[in-house]
Image (cartoon, rainbow, N blue to C red; front, top):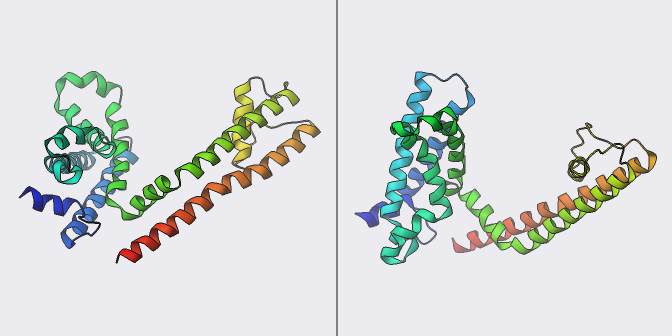
Length: 240
């Protein structure tokens, strides 16, 4: 019985069955529907019903994954103790915490702090479990971890360098170093809000150079991720 449940909620040997695809689609639909009440501040009986139903579905899903943890983790009895601490299991648990909090009268103070609504936002991360495209992106990030970390290090160094430079060029414009860091990040990403900007000629010239280099640095991760994604797609096609 547990083996059959596992085959429905998880694809085995990287191959999904019809029941598995239906289950994943139903869960994706449930996640999307559960987001709807978060778009309204007032709330209604319909939104309350949606919250209750979706949370119950998520709770059942969490229980099913917990009781079949030994199949997914293949570590025997230890799997039932290790699984709750895996990243996706933690996300699953956070998504059902509002239901537990609501059912417990001892957590009324937390409700006053609106923690329930905040926790509901974490449901969106459950999409990673049920979408193959998201799964591929996670594989790409793992595959290209070193190049991406190298680009991140380069970006952080560039932000620090340009922040220090601009802070020295125009101390009257940037009152604190954080203002310079904020300007540097905005210039690096080429967003340009215009709320903080240099006024001197040398400061503007440096901004132009910073923006141009920023475009190149920001473009690097896109190329790395795209190349990795295409490689994963070729591997998936090769398995079929």
